[in-house]
Image (tube, rainbow, N blue to C red; front, top):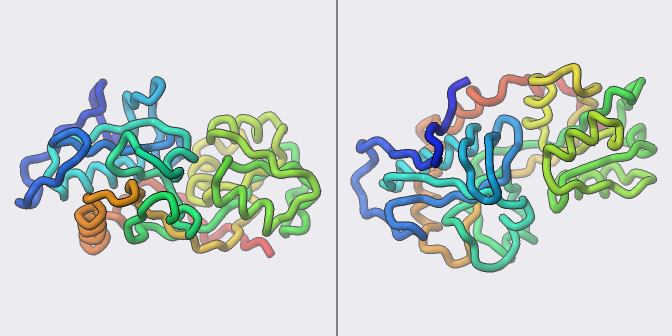
Length: 265
């Protein structure tokens, strides 16, 4: 798997072949500062110390680098954040945020979204201790369900599964998956592509990929409200979709065939 970024400071110099255009104004001149929420398998994994990202790779990372290049910026630097802070109101320490962020009406009140760049469903992955694996939403209701805090997965767990026990919400993906491995969580609800990648990466750590909960949610790039970068970033993203870059990144970073995963009813 190719790395998306190399260098201790994670400040990648873009090729000089970026399209000729007026370079947009950013927080740091000549640099696109990108908010992320590491890790999430396939989308953005790496190493961060505090807010400083030392190394990262994944679809969202490659997408942010491609956006920077399309904008004519020389560098991209990544800033680690808790997921909820990426979609909260207020001043941001980044120009854009890319982190599997689903476009919702509630989030639109706090931040600005680009056009969608990916459509996904939620998935349900069971712990190894859960046997036999449930085959329906009703079969999940007696289990301890966990999800990432402030995520659409948490909303789906509460409303579509409606478990008898309160949904346990964790602050980050590593804790979520470690609690699943330990059996603290009997099943997790999270973005299906990432669950497929995690299960493929470490098949003996987890139980059955129980199924998909269809949500057809759309990921978008986030910008602070009123950002002058909104139109340039949206245009750059549109070009990357049109020229096939997004599809190539999906093919590179996600190999699990979700078409074979059952739909939960």
